[in-house]
Length: 183
Image (cartoon, rainbow, N blue to C red; front, side, top):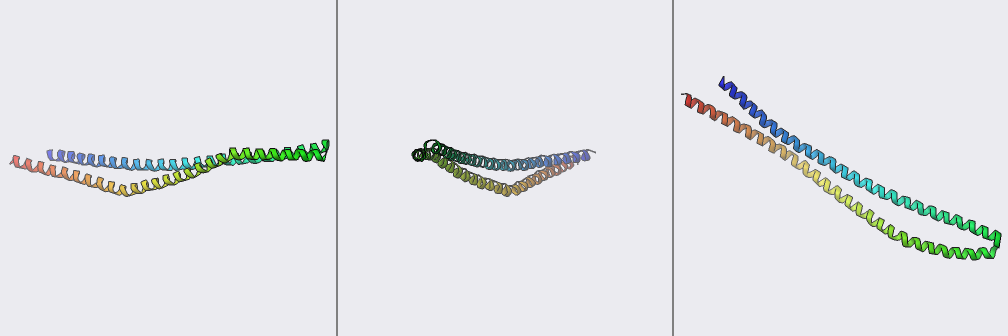
């Protein structure tokens, strides 16, 4: 009866050991899975940020084009009205002034838009480089995780086997000692 009770206790201890190390291994794998999800989240966020900058840049291009179109329409309407009311000579003079005004606007736009364009290009290249670096780093992390997972599984298995082996040896020693004292 005592031997059966002790065998049940040893089985419970063995089950506890297996359970504890299986839980540790599962937690380890869960941690790696959550890292993989976080990696994907980071990459998606970077892609969305880059798309947002591209949309912003495209909208500014559209605004610039619309502004240019509006200026041309206003200029044409102004010249037509000047020609109708003041004649061709006055139209030529106004047209010359419009050319100068257009040159000033063009230079002003270059002064205001060129730094923006260069800043955007620099930001765009920096973000692409950062995104590439992040992808490489995350790929390397994934590779490391894939290499480490079998090692951790092997380690867990070896620890479970050694602890269960230790438990068996302890039980055999206990039984031998019990037989020795019962003689």
